[in-house]
Image (cartoon, rainbow, N blue to C red; front, top):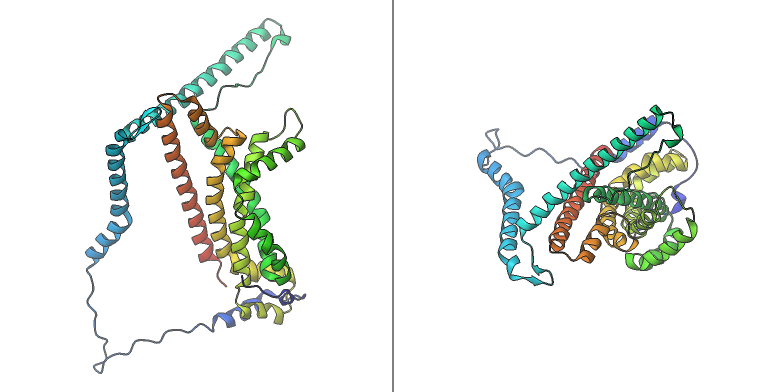
Length: 361
């Protein structure tokens, strides 16, 4: 990993016009391609190419038709081969059986919502009768304590990975900036990074569980212990891509750009916010995208063992249940986990593209 010497950050200050002018002089070093030469008659020869219609068909074929065709082939092979695969619960469910269980889970969610609404309606009616009878002591307000539905568990998993990812980003970005700017700090933490990076979430989980159990002793904590444990395991396993990419991006900043800050005697904070961070943002977002993917994969295993009521616990409970529908429900959960992971990756890719376009030095 390349590093940048820390003495490039001298103290001082300069106004913004001077920064822009100096940065413009650095950007001016980029070579501009010359105009193509014309023929002796004064006009360039025309090149024949594919028609616009052919180009449009090729673009649609690559971006839409090919992926859809691949998915259809996969579903067809799944439907054909699933009955041939025997498990302890019978034949492997095909796409139709899995889709039916997905519809069933949505129906269970709707039924649970109706039951919750009826619970609160009955409670309000009882309280109104008690107040009308002058028995204010008979007013009772209880929280509905029904089991979480599949959709509730999806939201719990999203909240858990969001907290773990946010904590990982808050820890990794400052450490990565420091490692990229200071060779000494980079040399100090690089061995620790290489040792900690491959550690499995299953190894972190017992340690985190014991620490959190000893730390959170309240009978009614602000956040459930299982939620905190799962989020911290996600953080510990997902911070490394962001840390490494931030360090690489910071250390590979154009030296001419850093010299601009030194010549103009910018303070360290001005250099960090106006030069280093804008130039490093594409690398930082690449690391964040990788970290979010790692965090989502780690989350399922963490929830299984920590019993955080998310998708991981749903898969584990269905596995323990062992009913005729369990395998189809597990496979539906796997599909949902994959789609959510794909969606999170697309969101981070869009943010990365937006940042790369809007933060250019």
